[in-house]
Image 1: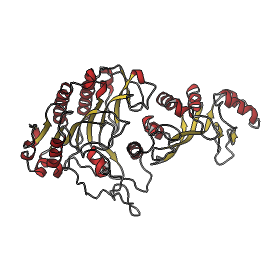
Image 2: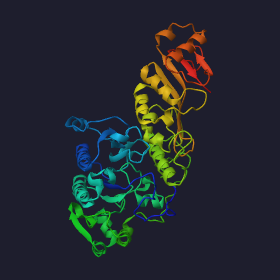
Image 3: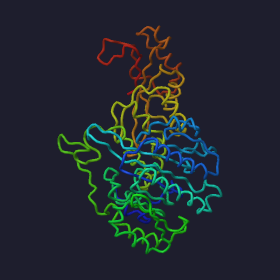
Image 4: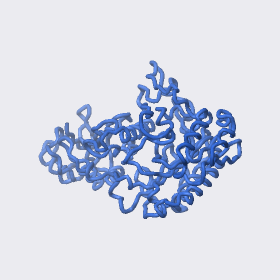
Length: 474
């Protein structure tokens, strides 16, 4: 993983980027498994906190684009939290401009440990995080102590409710969906090496320390010696440290003193975070390698694509790829696409039988620069997705997705299966001209060329489909 020490900025800040706006972030984390009702309660309190801050009209959705109403019924029905659960508040006036930095003004998310059969144990941490862009707060967030006071209370209450080991709050460009803290990003440490019980997650205007962290830094005295520092004890030997009441008014030198005081409890800057290739028969877990040679899980692929998008956007690479804005596959919800993948891929994968539900979400989340971009001789992505939505269960799409690690980040439809269409079911299998006319009538009408393969249902050929017409462009 790339270290970011060469980037400008301080150790507690993410490398600067014009693509991300000043944001108030807070989150708590523990290695322990917590009851889902406790996690949901803290998650709900985070959402309610953010809702009270918002000064513009917004709509809420899941991180995958499903619109939600934050009613009692919604929260009562949230009986499970997957390991990448998140909610987003989108500025209503910018709903169609998803690549605009002002588009998504707030994010609230939760992670929980998940069972891994290969490891024979739980992987990951329990955490709840929130983030909100400052400009979208009441009064453009000018009176920041009003907001940070509420965040202060949420952090301490949530730390107690979840028995958190670590946590921090900061005014930066951090978002709740970020894979790493600023410190982890700068030292090039993958979250696979994270151990909240032993080391701090991050440092900020507010920082949560466990008794073990305090042992590492020599107790509370080094922190109490910092001008303006307030140290409050919490149950379980933890303390919550804040620097004043305005996260935007902390002197750089004061933050540097806090960073230096807490450095013994942070993951070492010179630690060995190399991820080796596993030995034959080894794996990501047995060899402590993040990306092994075995096929990655969907969760690992999502995490990698998110990290690749972040690194691409902060590396100075152009923000516009060949087929759309850098990171659009992640913003569109790569998890949804992975549900249709032959095999999850860290850089790319093929998908098949993409139907109307996922097609509708992609149409909602992607802009015209992606949907209408020609790629190869087949249909545009938007045209193919609209055909799948118009003919649910009949038009099923195949293709491939390439992630943000490449300048050629894209989602391409290069084929489809057409099942149980009444017209094609009556079409002579040898009359390919009539079959192609029907494909066009179904909405696949902007392909630059006829398909390289148009085949009727068959049980005679090794790769024949007995229930569907197969359409494919090379």
